[in-house]
Each structure stands twice: as structure tokens, then as C-alpha cells.
Length: 261
Length: 245
Image (cartoon, rainbow over all chains, first blue to last red; front, side, top):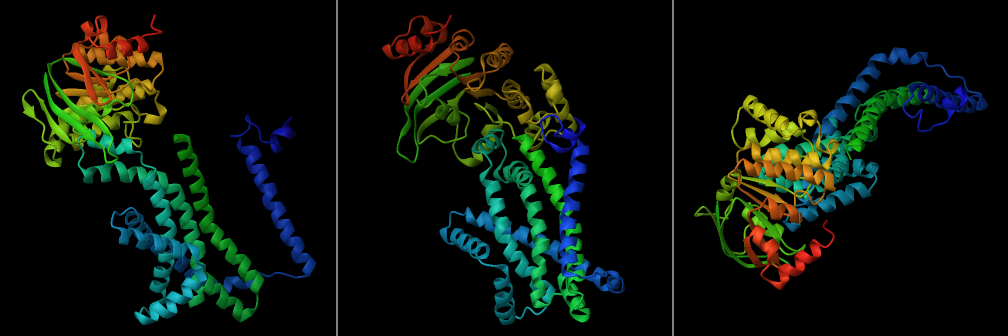
């Protein structure tokens, strides 16, 4: 009976932590065994010890990725919010500008946008600070996704909420501030948190224009000592330390929201 | 309270006439608006509540004309309590916060006095246990009672209710109707759109019967129920009362 409880999900043990933890460990171990077995087959020996000598550069790169991601989060939220408002605008030119923006940036690979925008638009307009150019490119890209998330959030506000706000005597500014925005934030927070994880991962593409962030740091280190695999395995782990807590937080927010409906 | 309607019409953009020249003068305490679905009852109530403007015609209460421009309406809506059919509570606020928000942000109460008004009302309406719950955690009947509490907390001159019980099962319907009846005994002026004929007959002194956007019949509630003057009302009542015990 205990064996069954440990391995099989049913309505009784859904909330139990023991089978959960136990099976997560099994999954992780299996995953690692497969990886290690593949390495064994190739007859490779890994040595991670050299990473310690690069600890300051790695820390700097890590900090740069965090800074890049946070700055891009702020700018892309602003862009996404404006674009979502523009999308609903009654002025057609503004509405279609937003639609074209979203379609273009969601419909093309980021690698193309990075090159095109940095070397053509960036050069033409004299944006030569690579960090801020990177923030801008990443924000424009992620802003298109955030725009859709926020547009969905605005669309999910029921008409009765606005009518009730009117009925109790709120002015339109108050309705936006006290009723609409808090509800949009509550509803879009899970998706926005998930998008933040995407921003962190996508920021790695900025290494293509030599923004010195985590991936670029690792690229430089591996180019100097040819320990490619050690470098990239470690890189993956570093990104996971950032994205995993966010992913957990997203899960938590989602479960809270699904309960409300 | 005296209500005066002069040729009130409402045409929506798709050209269907929701209301077609309603003219009505009456003194009332509790006025029930009845009639078949889609006849324009809710549209009329929204016009009376200042939520939408009539396409033409005039509305006045106690001789004061209602001006349908946003500047006047903002002030007008403050004096009126409005309860919707369902989902009128703010989703992101608890029952207590739903009552407090208009008091603080519209009526200028301090936070502490708004809280004490809210707590008193929740207590009186038997909702103390649910005061910190969000709308989705309350039953339909509790939601409507909170909505009524929010509407009367600001001491409105007139309470408007748009089919407040039509989304509820019979047991919950009665708890909401009992509450409205209690407010009636307190002397609050009420206009409600309802399908609860028993309530319209016993608890409402006046009646408007609206069909296809027109005022088909009106008068004292008790009298119209016992001796409807038109074939339309007689037909409607025989239909809605068919299965009454």
C-alpha cells in the first residue's frame, strides 16, 4: 500500500509532499544518469575545477545578466502596456501600429532582430552602448509578448465590473486605478512572471552582439581553454538558479488564480 | 418619492428600440417593474440610475430633473444605490472592502468610519462571517446581500435593483427578498425589476408593466394583480403564475 502511495497519483495523496519529493528525486537522478551515461560512452572526463579561477568574471557576468533582465523587464512591461492600450485604441492607425509591432516581433526569430537592430538601426541612430542597446532590443522583443498578455488581461475584465464602478460613483480615472488595474495585475501576474523567465533566457542571445553578460562570459572562457562542455553545463545550472524560483512562483500564482475561478 | 418620466426612449446603435416613449407619473415607496424578458425593463432601470442616457425624453425625481451629461451624472449616481442581477461586486476586493471603497473614494469617509459603517451593515445583514471573503468565496445569495449592503451604505435617496434574485435558487432568493423587505420597512425608496411576482404583489405598492419598450399598464400593485386592466397583463400574469401554489 505504501509502495502504491509513493508511486501513483490519486485523489487521496494529491497534496502529500513525500511522494512528490521522492518522485522528483527519481526524475532528476534518471535525467542525470542518462546524461552521465552519454558522457561515459564518449569517454570524456570532466573537470570543473578551473571555473573557480574565473569566479570574479562569472560573478560579473551573472550580475550583468540579472541587471540586463531586470532593466528589460521594466522597459518591456512599459512597452507591452502601451502596446496593449494602443491595440484597443479607436484610432485605427495606432491600433494597427501595435498589431504590426506584435506580429512582426512575435513572428520573427530574435537572432535576426538582434543583428538587424543592432547593426542597422543601432548604427544609424548612434546607439553604441552595448548594454543599453541590448536592453532595448530585448525589451522590444519581449514587449510584443507582454502586450498580448496584458491585452488578454484587459479583455478578461467583465463589463459588469465597469458598470458597477460607474454605479457606485467612481470617476473614470478612479475606475482605472482602483478597479481595472488591480484586476489586470492579479490576472496577468502568473503569465508575466513566466515571461520574466523567458527574458532571462533570451538575454543570452545578446552575446551575439558582444554584450558582456553570462553567456558571453562563458563563451569567452571556453574559447580560451576549450573546456566547452564544462562551461556550458555550468552555464545551464546558473540560468536554472534564476529561472527555477521564478517558475515555482509562477506555479504558485497560477494555482491561486485557478482556485479563484 | 415622486417619479416623473416624459417620453423616455432609448435606441441602441443597432436601431432596435429598447424603450419607446415611456410617460409615467407616480408617487411610490416601492415600485416594481415587471414584464417579459427583453422588454426594456433593465434599460429603463439603467436610465433611472444614470448609467446610460435616454435617446430622448426626461426623467425627474421629486421635481428635480436628471441631467444626462457626465458632470451631472457623477454627482447624481452618488445619491443612488444600484444592485445588479449578478457579478456586481468587485472581484478583487473582499466583501468588507467592497463596501468600504465607495465610502472612502466617492463619499469622502475616513477609513475608520467607513470600516465601522461596513462592519455594522455586515453584522446587521448576517454577513459578519464572510466579511473577509472574496466574492467568489461567497454564495450567490451572500453576494447579493453584500451588493445591497454596499448600495445602502452610502445612504442613498433611492435604491435600484435589477433582477436581484434571478440568478439565485429559491432558498437564496428568499433571503435576499427578506432583506429588501426589511429596507422597505425602514422607509427606503426602492425601484426593482423583478420576476418574483409574490414580492411585487405583497411588498411593492406600485407597479409598472413594460412590454416591447412600452408602458403597457401601471397602477397600484395589489389592484393590478387581482384585476389586471389589459389583456396583455392578464396574459402575462396567467403565464408567470401558472405553477404558483
